[in-house]
Image (cartoon, rainbow, N blue to C red):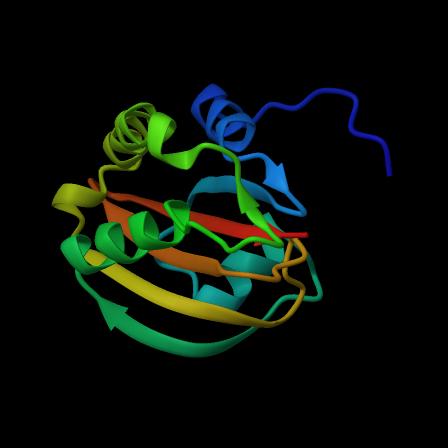
Length: 149
């Protein structure tokens, strides 16, 4: 499939570029806003793929979610795979992630739920992945990120 225009947040594209590495790349997307009244599976089927099935739904908090996401985003890798020169890029990556967290409104979210994809994951996760259902200021966002080789 060929993507004619990448309409994702510019911050995602920049972070993906900064984290490119040896046998390693990352991908992020933000889906929504969506109807907060729909069930999670129905929301994913509408926003991502009709094949989406959910597993491992776990309540979280804004701080837990941001911390876990940052731990994954700043994954160092090892000698065979991982981002190049991560230490020199951490400040910029952290600032960009802060902008993304603000766009979503995760800091003040009324509800944050971590979940996994049983089927229909929009990427091909290898080293790490995350999926969060975030309800903030009357809006619902699905934030997904992963790394691959």
